[in-house]
Length: 570
Image (cartoon, rainbow, N blue to C red; front, side, top):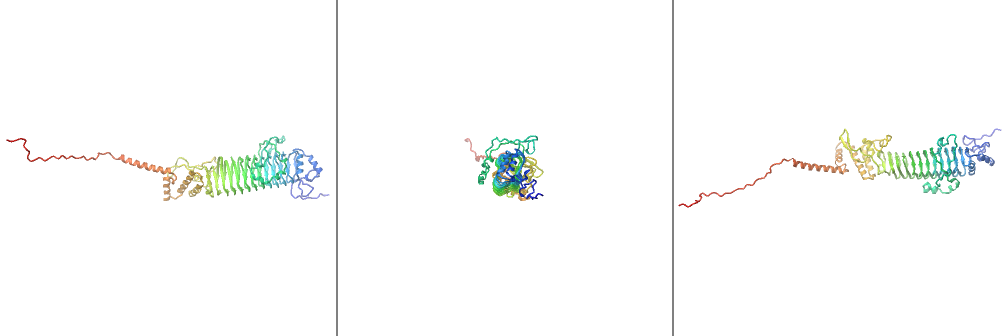
């Protein structure tokens, strides 16, 4: 008799169960039916054949809580190559402290209840691509030695990844963390003490809203403390386009490779407090509908938030890496505390209050072109190589303790007039620095180009200085910006009476901002006046004094006509 043909609802690559046409469970030989449709005697026979570390194929199988527990007991909590693609877990799936010695795949699997992988050890790669978790998911304290893939997963409940380790392995020779050729994998020690698991480590008081009942259903067995394995080889963790409808907790997680969350969507709060990433953390085009706490965390290479959309507060706390916020849209509050970092805010939109502060070391801002921010405060930022001409609202920028460029010091010689120029020490923005053609400052290497993408004309620079000056907290920097505005206005004026008057104003008192220059001119004028007086007095020749001698008139009595005789006649 010809066997009846059966049409499978999906095109799968394995032989499916003969019990029901719609069952996708892999057929167990020699019965031709999946494990869920075997008789009790057949099930017992299959379970007795299981040995620790052997490969397990349960693709498309409907697994109840008891059936899964019997299978894990049969392999004594240690699996080889494990295939659970398109499997359906109708009850709580407890894989606590299970060791997966080979690759484990859960692609397109469905978990109707709690999925607990607390303390599980994946000695090679694991994939949950397109898996659906209708309740909570826990990988707290799990270890993944190879690559971990969670692309396009959907988690309806809370997702707990606290203290998990991704991409580290203690095997150094085999591919993807496998043991070297000719050696067998050994189970990591379970005797090393680890911190007790606590949902309070999520670092967010609002996690209490999730309720404790759903976690009580997991039982205590799946949340026992697991061993601590030492690992070295790195792998990546990918969560591209994942959907987290509940709280997502990655507190204390360690990514020894890249952590990729491109296109992921977090419907509630997400926390990465105390996490560690040995390579790059990629959040391009991710969406945060709840509060996002990205730190304190350590990232070695780059934290990319390009194109993200945050509808709630976004907190960043990291250092030692590049922070990219290009084309990001933050509708809530942005608070970034960075140390030894570079920040790129090109074309970002910050609708709420925003603050980027230097926590320690150096904070270098590479680009603010196209930034639209109504209230952005930069504290301790290095702006020597960052152009400010591309800001859409410069008056909304607050600058505190920032480092600006400066003119070249000392005397300068040139072919034009005047041939000798002495530059006063003042703070200038990078746009003027670029327009004048001065040597660039604040650039560490040849890869860092000059500030800004285009040079501004003096008129635009004058307006830019005027719009930036109210947001400067330092009075000296504000005076320097006022001086820069007048200087650009003078240089941008056509040759004529107006430019001559501005030049005289600059020469006399530095646009009213250089009191020392005016005092110098007054001192010079006074010195010239005193010198002129002294010179006049010294230059006149010495002459005889014009003294009119008094003439003394001697009046003598007139002689009589007859002089009496002196003697008698007779």
